[in-house]
Length: 250
Image 1 (cartoon, rainbow, N blue to C red):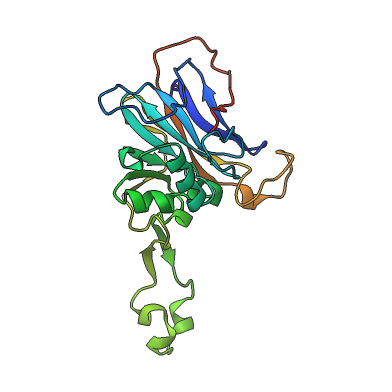
Image 2 (image 1 turned 135 degrees about the vertical axis):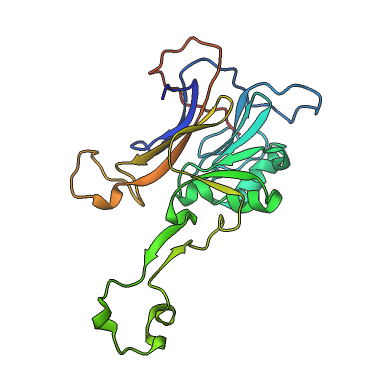
């Protein structure tokens, strides 16, 4: 799949979060919400980070969240580490979450996902695109027991899973996305004109990092599903490999 122009992603080894700009796009952090009749320029507003000027009373914290305005659509990418801090920054920056058209969660770590508790409270029906991860309540098939029939023969029903009536089920872990308007993502695709989700499975990130990247013996680090957000733009200039850190500070 050809890479689109603007990618919101993260660099795992540095544990810092970056916006990759492959083609130049007009980016700005607006001081306030524009009037309803004024066209919104394409922009990325940093809502949550450990960096920033704090000119509007925002708080710094470990985590990440940005609000992307793209071709008249408003996209929330991640929601920070703490729902209370996220809510504070959103209000300090004058952002109306009711205007969010869709939300994207990059991965399950709490410093990116926790603020969704506030998002779901403000706009419960917002469409959320989430990695297909059982720990984010994606459905999985569970086999209760691998015991042979003769091994459990004679056991009373109360000692068998579900009274012995079934040995497997489609299961979802309870969590913030259990009853949400969520779509689980397991492959890269275009979800709206010019809006792409790039799906990967991190080779060296699960609940902690392993360094150096070539260090063997970490099978527990392999396979965490992740999503990057990519936007197609028509304005060019930057080479494909160029990556710029976005520090439009809150």
